Image (tube, rainbow, N blue to C red):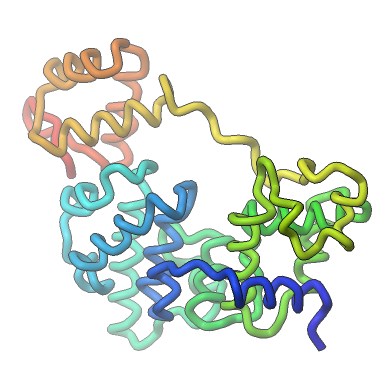
Length: 284
C-alpha cells in the first residue's frame, strides 16, 4: 500500500508535471542520451541539444558510425565534452550487443556501458523499463533530507528512507521527485508556502528549510578553470585545425592568460578529444 509521502508527491505531480521531450519515449538509447546530457547540465539548456542530437543521431547505429569530430560538433556548448565520446562508445557497445541479441536487461549490465555509472544506470532503468528504483540525484536527496530532517542525519539514513518509499513502478515516481525538487523544494529559496508537506516536513517545523545533506561539494567556478580552457580549445578547433602556436595565441586572445594551456592540450590529446597531425591540432 502506498505511503502517505508517495501519495502526496504523485498527486502533486499529476497537476504539475513538466513537458520534457525525453519523457515521451521509453527507448533505451534515447533515454541514455538524455541522462548523459543532463549530467551537470540544466534541463532548459539540454532540451534543444537533445532534439538536435536525435535528428542527426536517431539511434545507436547512427551515433556509432559518426566521427568523433562530428559528435563533438553536435555536443559543443554542453560542456564536459568527454561525455560525448563516452556516449559514442556506449552506442557502439549497444550496437554490438544488439548483434549478439543481448541488450542490457539489468542495472548491472547498464553499468558495463561506457560512461554509465550507478546513478545513470538506475535512471535509465526507471525511465526505460519502469524499474522500481529511485535514481537518487541531488534534488531527490535534498527533498528527503529536509522532509526527514530530524531523523536523517547521514547520507546512509537518507538513502534508507528513499529506498523504503520507492514504489514498484519507478518512471512516474522519479519524474515526480525530480520535478518537485526543481520547482518547489529548490536548493535556494524553497517555495515552502506552496509545498504540500508544510505540516509534516521536519525542516519546515524546525525553521531550517534551507538545510539539507549534500551528496557532493558545490561545483567549482568556471571562470579561469581548466574547463573553460577545454571548452575554448574545442570551440576554436571546430572551425579549423591550428598549429600549437596559433592555437595558443587564439586562447590568449580569448582568455587573456597562458595558464593551463600546455597542460590542457596534453590532457585533451590523451583523452582523444583532439589529436596532432604533423604540425596541426584538430578534432579526432
